[in-house]
Image 1 (spheres, one colour):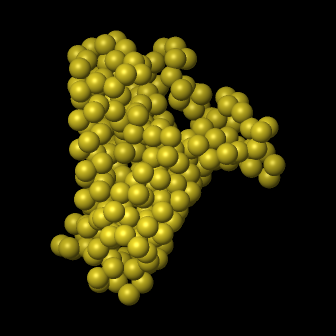
Image 2 (cartoon, helix red, strand yellow):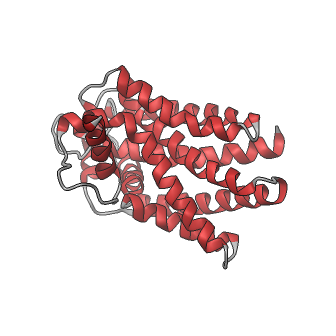
Image 3 (tube, one colour):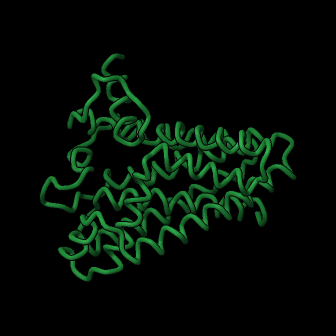
Length: 265
């Protein structure tokens, strides 16, 4: 139990800005095992984001509350995944060889592709989340619980989609220059089963309100498949930035899927 707590806090420290016990460090062995808890971090980030939304919705409009929820989410993770998304936009937008793409992604400066990508990403998140929340508040007698499950299922499932890439693909870089290198070495059934358990459980509870919502897993993993295939084609695998981009894109696809299912299925 003590070792599992250490692994969990290692995961929490690596993927968020939430304070952890002082004895926790970036031990490569624990980081490798921490992948089993990565979707559970989505529970935490989603819960904090929902709490911000709820508090601000008490005296502000739904749209403004959603903006604050997004801000709190970014602050909680330190824009960890958004940074990866921007780097992928810059790398794949400006590079035409594996070496050039990896070099651009390694650069800490943000380029035009990354800036434009982030603007469009947050516009989509804002619009889709706002529409979803308004639909639940109008049509669902248990709106607050539904909105909470929407938040945590989106964060958990998108993280599962991202982390599952390390179970099926090879790490692209030949050196240890990436912050995600430690998690790319190996994995066991514990990492795989833990990731899928924590990634799918919130969607299961969400589907108890609308059983059709379970269908949202399909477009998310279809997008995950094409992203992983795209990364494989251009850089022979993935990097930490690719995982961050996958999480962000799959989160947006999830919101879009929920809206589509709610309105048309």
